[in-house]
Amino acid sequence: MLSSTLINKREKLLAWLEQAGRVGVAFSAGVDSTVLAKAARLACGSGALALLAESPSLPRGTMEEAVSLAKRIDIPLQILQTGEFLRPEYQANAGNRCYFCKQTLYLCLLERKAKLGIDIVVNGTNLDDLGDYRPGLQAAEEFDVRSPFVEVELTKPEIRELARDWDLPVWDKPAAPCLSSRIAHGLEVTVERVRRVDEAERFLKEFLQISELRVRHEFHELARIEVPLSSLELLTREANAATIVQFLRDLGFRYVTVDLAGFRSGSLNDVLQLQI
Image (cartoon, rainbow, N blue to C red; front, side, top):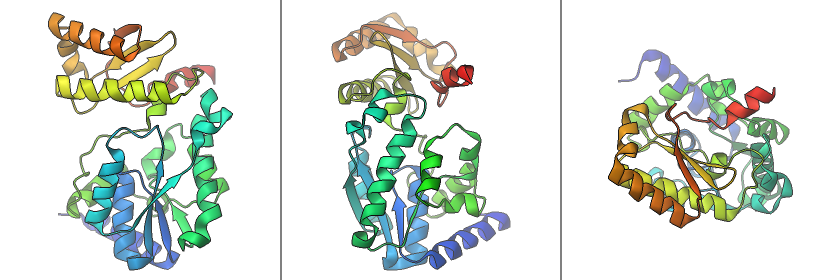
């Protein structure tokens, strides 16, 4: 059962969206954007539209999941080609790569607002995101993309509660940043590298039966595997290690390492913090 505080925030969210007019939701099939799409459908009815950018940085299966979720929510889904991989600034993969990705997406949406029949674009940024390093937020501000969760002060745990209350299957889905976020800053982002990371993570999740892990693509074709500390022993078993090393080498990695600090979301940003 939702708390009275969360019920109040939910009603504020629905009222905010209803007053916004025809709403386009930047959609990724993650918990935040799925809850926002559901809220937009409830508040705006046929005036709500989900917008998904097709990109090599999406893990395989995301497109199918997005289509399925949109059908479940009963919200129309528009798939867009944005072409961020064609931008040298994005490929260079400096610390502000995410800015150029979002800038490309939001510019595409701005140019198509009239054709799409929407008055406003909203994203799933929540209150907890504001304490993290997210250069994409600058692009949202520049293109007047709004963040309703922030404006009604919804946190990530509260959004998960809403997802469960609305019977959305993503309520406990782990965070799933784009595949480009696995590439070490300064190492060029290419379709081949993100594909390699995607295949490695898919294999490890199935082989080890772990739902949340990362394969970081470092320089010199080195794969740095992060799993929860409780699962480290699975990686170091002799038979498992041999199978994992062979699979990742077949993908194109030259070296395979295990991070003894365990899984940390956004760990590649540690380097950026040292440079500040």
